Length: 184
Image 1 (cartoon, rainbow, N blue to C red):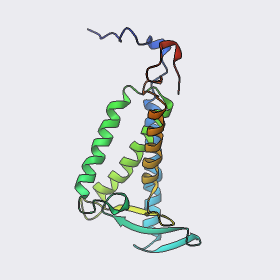
Image 2 (cartoon, one colour):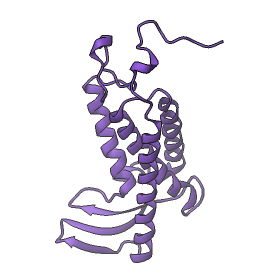
Image 3 (tube, rainbow, N blue to C red):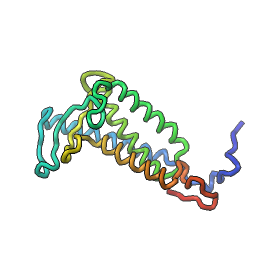
């Protein structure tokens, strides 16, 4: 017994293709970039070491962060791990309906960033679910961050922008008529 699409939805042939592959490719790219940059920085710098790149404005500074951004929840590393796992599961559930390139990009960035930092939480010291995240990019007064953090931030901004523009996961505009489909 198959379920038919709702009467107001366009036929499958008229809908944009699913974007799961795009989401996965972006997420894998972010995870690999994050992992490689962390391995390089940990092998190159000592904890707390700072290497200026552009005067005092931009530098590499190796820190191991037990908390979230701005050192929030430093004693709650296991909670942050569970939140990251929930984000990964949530994105996996949304991926089935994903037909928008914009949403695939945004969710791929968030997924890759969450997985990148989750790897640290599981496999770095002091132990599983309590591992400290490796951060190494320092810009001005801003907290030290990494590739995963950057991907999560950019992806989050894109998600807000897509929502404000009324873009849906399925590649249409929210509330748009069938003849106003938008492939973004």
